Image (cartoon, rainbow over all chains, first blue to last red; front, side):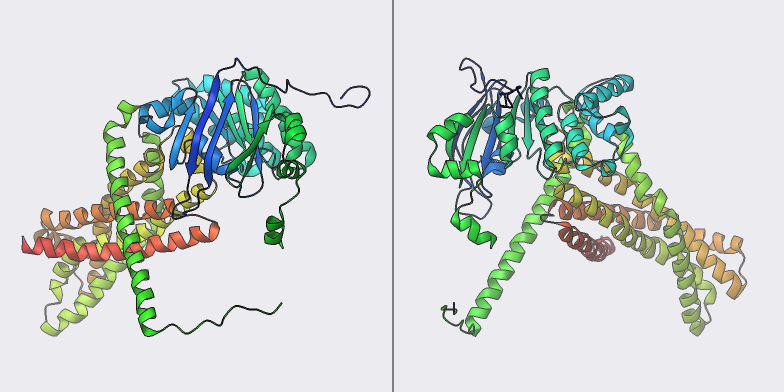
Length: 274
Length: 279
């Protein structure tokens, strides 16, 4: 905030066009099993290096489906998906294994392994992928916990002993253990109170700066998206309505884009709630 | 507003038969899919066990030991108690029935053969299905719901290698060992009752048992129990991975694991005996 009380943009809103693409999606079509209607209907998008891109849209718009495709958890019906220059459609097991090391994922509910302590959760990717001594792994765990503003003693706690905000931070810490080039976050501030949610947003911005990562965030929290996104991808009914900075969306977006930006539900959506 | 939709007509007999057929075909197709999935899981498990270390996906010995402790060591008190009771029960039944022919001392033969060939593997199989099979399904099912399986995959950790192989190896190793233990304890139970009822000493009972038993009899039960163990592990894993939705589905999946495993154990037992007695 400035002295006049006008919020200052925290980041450069328009990405430099000479950056390398980290995610390239071409004509992506997906179906739920047994469903004839596609969930994603020919989606095209590009995410550039060091960008923070927020994917927004109403419920059932296909945000999470798109994120699962980018995570390579589901296979598309058709289309092409390139992550960090690797084409996912014809990637072998070994290459996929290598690619996974460069992509960090923070799930909506944290997806921390409940039978392990937070420290064991954080050390798991290191234990599996890096040949490090226990002491080195301990140091790295403490370092990553500090990066997400968590006390080193949190490492000894079980995920069930953490608050919602702490759990999200711990999940973020685990997702950056391998120093990924790409971080994918599914609803990172959902279900948190506004203060904790704002702290998570700041954390994502700081992590991007500190680790020079590309970040893709799926969110329905408008405040968060407006604060952290370099670009917003507005998804509706499996199609991209518009892509651009918040200002571009506000200036040139259709009525539906404006409604989605303001959180105004569609009539059919409203009827389904009632 | 009044409901304007036309009233639903009662389905005709032909329609009912048609719907039942569609349901049956869908059910059969589901079963075939599950059998196919179980086969793939078994083959993948074998692959990771043999080649995992060369593909940067080794099966951790510590995970196998953890599973062994859970499946075998922690189940030892209940396994021992059940085996002892089965041995005593068989001796009681045997003495009572053989009394008709004045051949009560032949109870040793009855207990030794029925425990080693049939009861020990069956009881251990049912115990492990109810205790460890259901726990494995619940664990995997809960992990599916809370996206922990997805988390493993995005971390480049194959869930089959990380979760399935240790459980499978632990079960296939521990259940035969538990069966052997159940053989010993079951026969001890028989000896205990026989001493009280007929006054036969432990030494005499043991000598007679060893006279009757061959390695083949003991191996018959142990081989069967290894098959039961693989069956339980695969059933538990398939049901665990099939969980979708919420916690209620985990409950259903665990129940299904126990029912399918026990049914599978009994059917496999019958087939095993059928094949062996004809070869």
